[in-house]
Image (cartoon, rainbow, N blue to C red):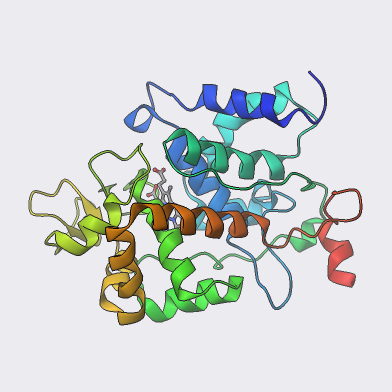
Length: 278
Ligand code: ZEM
């Protein structure tokens, strides 16, 4: 297999997505979450964090509670890394997110290779840079503005909660947002807007929002998108217009995966410590 054959890697990722003995029969959602958490540590001001370096391999970042459960995603991808040793983990994790979105009938997202793994351990981002689901709109804004996103992009990205579920043993929250959590669509926005949501304590005593019969759920941060008028405008648009949501999600997700990735003339990203000195 030729080094640099990213299509072959894409095919291998697709083959690994159906997982009969895992969540809803699919590794897709947790792969999307890995790509997001690998990238969402970015801090625009200092230029630190982001997907370059796949720094979640280090204990410090892996032990951030926000990353609980992402070892499953990493395990699903490890045989692919073994099969294609020339791809960096940083590229593989982000590419897997893109392939998973498309596989689950979502939009095509632009993706570029070139991330490197050999960054210095001192550049592993500190814990606490990812959003805390118990909080409200101010917190959401401070986290995503730090990465360089605006309100529209925040809401578009949040539409990823159309995928997958919460696990009591990972985050304390429990349940899926939509009835078909392995298919990308704008159902999350429709349900957020049009269902009745009741604040309830789940089985492990954590407060979340559930529908009448406790089948579907919303996080406090999901509800904040509804309460905040500037966010709500976008929730309404995306609930109405699936094509608009797909376009905006693709653009924002593509941007997320590029945060902090600064490529040199040959398309290879600078190692983080080199960039920090620029
Ligand atoms: Zn999530 N997310 N997320 N998210 N997320 C969870 C699951 C998933 C927040 C959050 O606290 C949580 C984005 C934004 C935000 C996905 C993608 C994206 C879970 C459940 C929590 C608690 C974890 C568990 O228990 O397994 C918060 C507070 C967010 C912003 C305010 C963005 C942006 C995403 C991608 C673009 C996905 C796909 C999942 C489902 C994972 C799975 O294993 O099924």
